Length: 82
Image: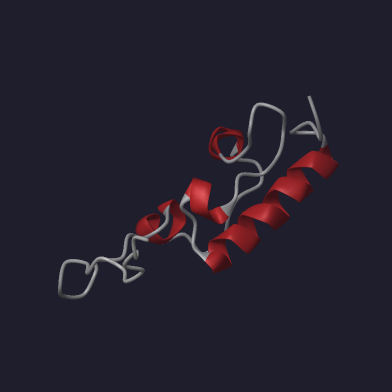
């Protein structure tokens, strides 16, 4: 019977460079709900909000995006569903 090695492969040594989200790179403190071009990039074709992993946002900016998208939907700028 064969035994399997469950150890993980070692990664490249040294600190990993962190990438910043699109809002942190621009230095934006506020996510504008009226910026429909940016808002539509953060939605699927069905109108769902992309996850942090998929959109590349940091946790704080993802919360701001969520609030801005919900505000834009309430104002009638973006649809709830398609």
